Length: 87
Image (cartoon, rainbow, N blue to C red; front, side, top):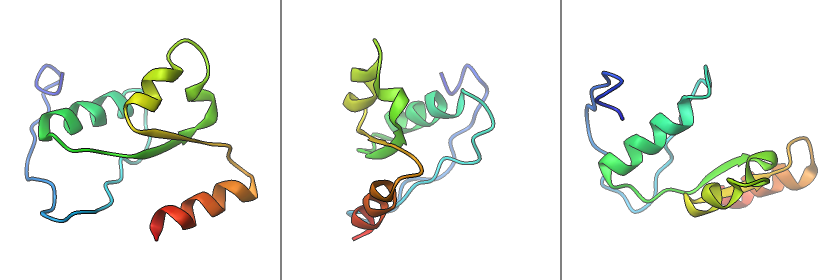
């Protein structure tokens, strides 16, 4: 998918047990599929946060399977979740 879209992968993930990769800015609905393509190409194991509505419906299982954790934005639980993940 990356090569079909004419993207060129440059570099490698850090040689660390844990690191943060940020896929931003979210300019279109293609950001996530391209990021997942990159993750597969580079054989990275990822965990990510996504808005809770992504995890509902017929494809909800896929977002969990890809390493996702749903977040209800605008709640105190959401900010606590981020703080816990950083530790």
